[in-house]
Amino acid sequence: MALPIIVPAWEFELQCRLQSAHALPSKSLPPRPVRVFQLPIAAASAGREPSERELLIMRWRRIAYVYSPMLADRKATASIYNPSEDDTESADRGVSLSATCEWLLRKRLRQDWALLDTVKRAQVLALAKRFRREAPVVKVIDLAADAAAWTLFAMYWCGASHPSALFNKSLHPPTGLIRWISQFHVDQQRIQVRTIQGRFAHYLGVTSDRCDVLVQRMLKRTGRVALLRELCEF
Image 1: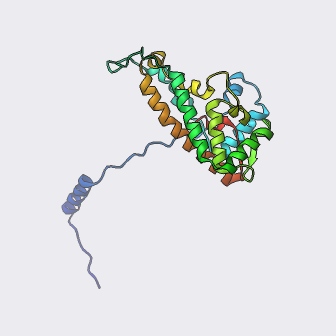
Image 2: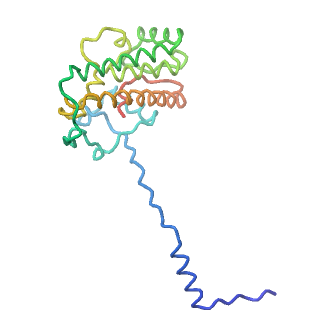
Image 3: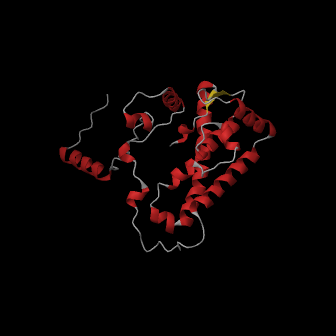
């Protein structure tokens, strides 16, 4: 029979102190973001019942798992801009910020369009002819995933609710582009032209990847894709 091991009280206390001294500090994990599915801004601000399209947008935002951050976390860049000595870019370079960013957007759309094969381009063009704004849901057999992602990406940046608007001559700058530029302070738009252009070129790639993810989520859960540009308002 094994005899019990007797540890003196002073030795037990010393051992506890050594263990507590070498113990790793507990790592506090940051809180996970609160996922809130909000009503579209127009309905929420007017205090009215949402329309059928707004309810459709909210339903597909749930399906694609697109959530809106808490209003307290939304901080406009314009409100926190403070001019500094680093703002050395000349304001008189003969470069229009919106025109150059629009050129970058059109170039990205042409490049991604060129990556689609003939069949997928034909699917997009055929969809533009029979698309109904009140029924923007498309089956996967009618539109391939990468073609749907390109269409969703283009509709978001051009501010189009109908795919046919993507192939018509526009009389105004792309709405999505103007909305993105408006987040910057007026002085930033005038002085930090090159910096904003670089950020925009990078963000084009980010939104393109996000559109691919949205399409894959919708196809995985329903086998269909909702071509609603409001889904891309991340």
